[in-house]
Length: 86
Image 1 (cartoon, rainbow, N blue to C red):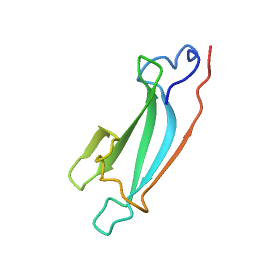
Image 2: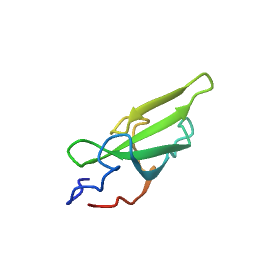
Image 3: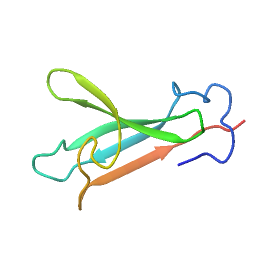
């Protein structure tokens, strides 16, 4: 996703989280529910990243077709975001 306008001051870098994301892996061996956030890249795109606790440490990564799990029928992605423009 790309924003059509420049974000307001304070939201123009990758440190500003602007989205709440929920991922759901429907497979029995999957992660179940995964929390994620969205932030802006330098070219005004919204990048989604996830945080998973596997019992020893938390991992941060970028969501793609195989991360944090391989997407299949029944899996879900829910995204809600707001970004002030300036």
